[in-house]
Length: 505
Ligand SMILES: *[C@@H]1O[C@H](CO)[C@@H](O)[C@H](O)[C@H]1NC(C)=O
Ligand SMILES: *[C@@H]1O[C@H](CO)[C@@H](O)[C@H](O)[C@H]1NC(C)=O
Image 1 (cartoon, rainbow, N blue to C red):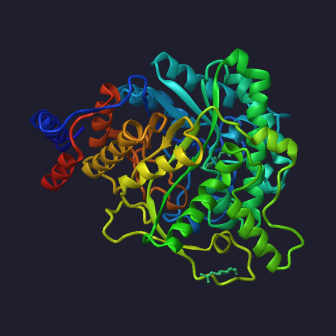
Image 2: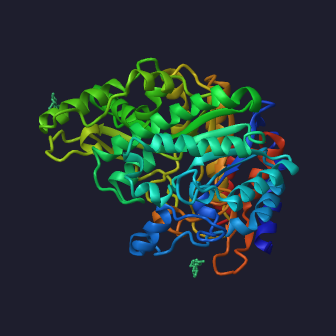
């Protein structure tokens, strides 16, 4: 802890008491939960130890180091595989109610299949979960946060329909081994991201068939999710008493102007990016959003495909997928302005052509250290309200929200970001009656930020990647979040933090 950090805390505390009269204290509901999140490949390291199998991120970063911004990988990362006890100490120090982490499929099943269950992998997650419980921290467990066993990718990965059955086998192992100790499960993290970027973008496994493979991936993810939800209800729910959800990411899509064209384009963008996964689960229609169905069917026909590039669900699948959630995980970071695209009809299938909109961000929006992430707290409130009205106000756990900044322990901009977004969330809960049960900051620690390597830092705790110990140090934002998590209230107005930022550059 350096002097600057200490001074910062002092100023923060001083400002808090100084201004408490001027601004009403905003508090969250009594049972509202605060937590932080991580994901296996981004923090664990230990990529080839204790029987772990190769994942698609191991393969991809080793095969194409030049595609990662800093040419790095997650071989060691935060070394949390060996340092998880230290991480739980940080969680305890933060005072959070829960910890959202993910289980690495190839650490549990090195071959991808249940013919080989890795005892060391089971031991690791049992120890982590037990350590959390010893410290009164609730585990919130993501089953799949992008590190697919490479063996399964060699069979086509998420584009092969049979993967749904193998995912069910994997989930069964997790329920059997950990289900008595886990109350909150998430099947998938951000299928929009891993289907779109993994099969039609730049992420692992490097698929380049947008408009085909991304839709196949999405289809099989939804099928797999429905099957696992059904499995839990049939075989485990009574005994284990947990709840299951899926985490979908939502960027707010704001019409560029009030014109009908822009409003329609923004709604189309919402349906393509969020409705793609939400509509089959949260509505009774048993299909993708109407606008997706219509545009992709039409484009497929024009491009001389024999059938739509957007698959259909069987009636059994519709039954399994419909209402397959106890709560909905929601990741939100930023906002885009949306207008119609140039409407050129391309012979090349692609998600973007099918969606047919143009998205941008305003120059005046405060920046982060990620090109795509601008600070727009009001977009969070609008996103939550749109989910509420479109899907009949489902129970939501905010499973990610956060900002990347340059390294450094003095991060008032991160304090401002969290404070601003929490104020928007408070309005959504108290003024708009959105049902939100908890908030998760991404992330506990700096970590391997996928194709951006270690160049984008999201942590409440900084990680020193030059030290063999991967030393963790609390940032100013850790003390801010500790205060929020332990009091359940926001200490001062956000204006106060803006002022604070300016006076403490
Ligand atoms: C594991 O990977 C490291 C590189 O990260 C390599 O040096 C080491 O030899 C590997 N160990 C095994 C057992 O393959
Ligand atoms: C875009 O194309 C569609 C079908 O190709 C057409 O119906 C629509 O009128 C076009 N929109 C604009 C704004 O040109």
